[in-house]
Length: 110
Image (cartoon, rainbow, N blue to C red; front, side, top):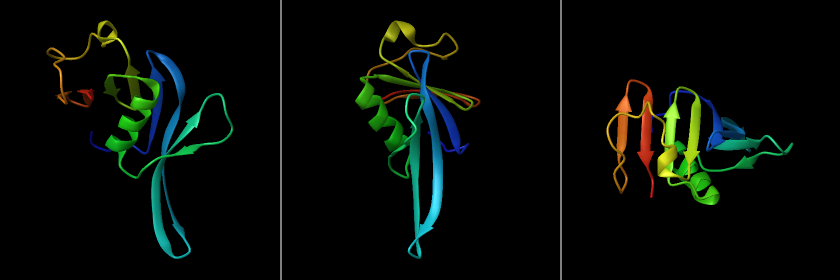
């Protein structure tokens, strides 16, 4: 997945779970950057890695999602193959496969 934005809305099967924001700052003179998930149900963020692919894979694993659909600034974690969005070109295959149609991407992560 290519980083094209600094903020994404994260949903799980269509239900919003929070906002994923990229944070870059300097800490004691050292550069520090990470993706932070700000859940809808909490006032405190959860810090992940500076790599978007790795961060999304970790969150998907925590939620038991097998597919990740990215459309614009929305990342949808999908647990049921039947719920893969209709806009996805081609067929979802096992393994790590990425489909891209403009800015629309779906990636099988399981």
